[in-house]
Length: 312
Image 1 (cartoon, one colour):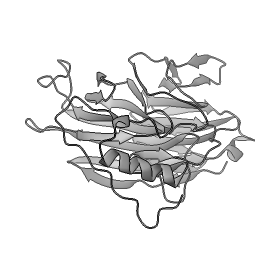
Image 2 (cartoon, one colour):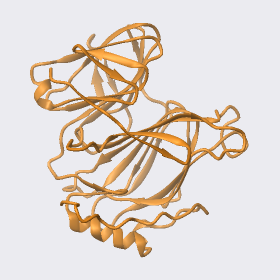
Image 3 (cartoon, one colour):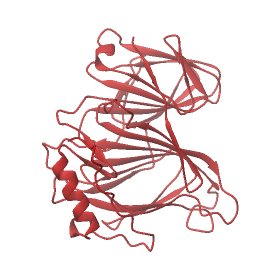
């Protein structure tokens, strides 16, 4: 199997370390997964506000938030308010086409600012985007998933965050998470030193993010905040992949069928053509009603103009 190791683009946003793995120079989405950030891990001092992401829009995508540590309050233009905590998923759907869009805010919450009584003054969060198939009419929406299928294999705790999955022992699991294309997401945490074998689906592309520790597979090492990537052609003759790691290692395993449409990204917008992204920039910066309003006094973030080198 041909596995490539992708390096993150590292940045610091408001004191929060961000490792961006997708988009990655010259690399296409993994199935419909087109964006992947690992925010944190970071601990906040008393008086620090934590993550504060002001009002911003999205188009033709779903935001997929997977919490590892800490708590975050989501507010959106549909009127939803939801705190997401450890081992929970939030999925926000922006809808497809130029008549739809959504806007939202995200901010850390603690016991004294709207979080649970035992909310940690910390943050570790995997934020993904899922590109929507633009040949479908998909409506805006928001879903919160506090309970997900959980099991253990060889002292590795597994949580199915989306899709369905059949283990090497033949056990089948199905997540309730809403999706519009075939994909899978699994969080794996090593309770002891050891290995686990993950089954692969023909026609899927795959990636494995290491959020803690490191893994070894096929003679290659993937360190924290790196991403293993392999394509559907690699899966044709391989029904599984074996991962070896030490106690405390944690990974996010994602896969899916490639979309039929082109996937272009600029700022917080996704589209299948340059003209639609240009129109979304104009609409957001001019307060178009398609993006609605968020009940928040957080700063409204302006959309940057397309760069001269952007290709559609």
